[in-house]
Amino acid sequence: MGNSLKPLSLYIHWPFCLSKCPYCDFNSHVRQHIDEAAWQQGLLHELKRYAQLIQGWGQPCLLTSIFFGGGTPSLMHPQTVENLIHNAINLWPVADNLEITLEANPNSVEIKRFQALYQAGVNRVSLGIQALNDAALKKLGRQHSAQEAVKAIETACQTFKRVSFDLIYSRPEQNLKVWQQELAQALAFGTEHLSLYQLTIEPGTAFATLYDRKELVLPPPDTSADMFEMTQAMMNKHQRPAYEISNHAAPGAECQHNMAYWRYQDYIGIGPGAHGRLSQRSGRYGPLHRWATRQKKSPEGWLQSIATNGHGDEEVTDLTPEQQLKEQLLMGLRLSQGIDLSTLAIPLSQALADNIINNERLRHLQQAGYITLSPTTLTATQAGRQRLQGLLEYWL
Image 1 (cartoon, rainbow, N blue to C red):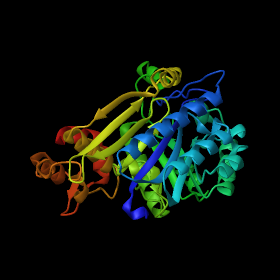
Image 2 (cartoon, rainbow, N blue to C red):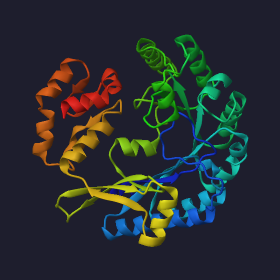
Image 3 (spheres, rainbow, N blue to C red):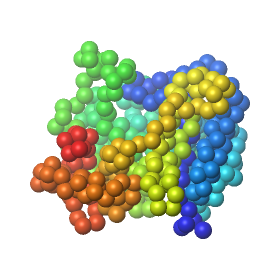
């Protein structure tokens, strides 16, 4: 049955954290009191509303993944997580290998919830470790220690079927040797998935202020480039190649939810600031519309909008073919496997797709070694993926 149904993913955003990290520009907030019952009710309302919308289009879907992101969704009560999962899997047919991921931090409060979260239905956990030494954790504004990080990874591996954790490199005062030792320590845990991010200074963050004041100094660009190259070499040696710019996995252990984003498949986004992409075909052979949804960013505003307007949406946009193409290229070229050219024409006119592929600037990018083009696949090279945003701005 699953082969005839359109894949669908679900993202649920929990916007609350115990504290705000100085490098973070995600939609996360610190609140002294959270009415979790009200939040569960709001999330269930939006989940059911989107299900009714999609069912009204008459295009059956197969739920392939659920992702609890944030914020810090491991601060949710496990019963809330279970209720959301239970409702989701009763609204759609589900894949036999349904992936249910929840992001967690490695402090002791959250570690104690791991078993309850597993019993609630979570089968994959993504840990925000970020660093494996105390000095770096303190500089990053993290609330856990290196010892807690190690304990969290070990407990997660004993509890969940699939485990991933994040690390940030190219940090202040970090050199190539220090990062190499830290990455070797991370690999020793044996998890099949690692997310490895170069530290970037995001506008509006506390780090951006410090950086502008020259109170925060990052490694020189050449050192950061060396760290990137060394990371790729080490991860390849340990059979954890990059399948996306910052994500590494053993074959078959890729995050299926994020793959849905990068493959430009449909996903629902609920919760403050959550984004979604949903497609609807007008008739059997009519044009394919792709809707970009964005929910209200303010937690209180999101709840109020549901109560007042019956929904939490801030914006719903019918994307033009050109917008769809740019999004598909931006997402798909992040993948080391690139984009299957047969999918490029699905939401577009073949003429538009052909015009992009035959673009003179694309030939320049091929000659520079940033893009490769075969009869079936369009791929950014490793050097191209490092510069993807700038390449697309030039190309398109």
